[in-house]
Amino acid sequence: MAQHAPTPGRTVSDQVIPPKEYLGLELLAGQTLRIVDVEGKQVPDLVCFNLANPRERLSTNNSRLIQKRWLLTTGHALYSDEGNVMLRITDDTVGVHHASAGCCNEFANFLRYGERGTRNCLDNMTLAAAPLGLTTKDIPGAFCPFMKVIQHPDGSYEIQEPDSRAGDYLDLRAEVDLFVSISNCPQDKNPCNGFNPTSLQIIVFDGTSQ
Image (cartoon, rainbow, N blue to C red; front, top):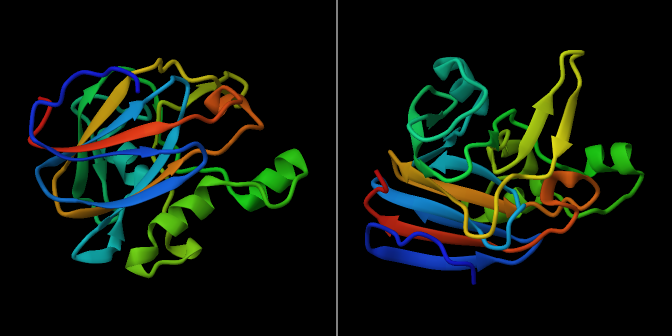
């Protein structure tokens, strides 16, 4: 497993998400979720829900609007659809993440690549959120750590290979009790994961990295 900076608090859990798979977990207020890119160039898609009221959920749109930023890094927050802070970025070794509220899905994959039945983040996040009794229609737009998207002056955009290297990580501190749904992005038809999906390490620890 790739080396990474030691956590500054007691480790609550330490799990690996295999390539193209998913994970759902509870993250309590004050705990920090560390996402480690084990081999480099791997993107997770992440959504979260208020554990006490899952109808309140992540809004990357609010996160951008409130902070007047499309690029979020250390010190910035992820807000809910009700305008409350759900997660705060406390440490970030990459600095490039995608917060456009998109994710790969069966329908878009077919239109882009002409294939049916591909593994995708929308299905993965739905499966991860199954303990909440949610369906695909309940999954909000995702926050995508390490994903690199370049915007061009003519209005087009381009997905490029992530800058993240083996051992790079992002720390997210919960401000309220949450349920977090993570897809280890299975996309292998574009450079999102360097055309080669690999593992992610997910560590939960008490306290904060800042």
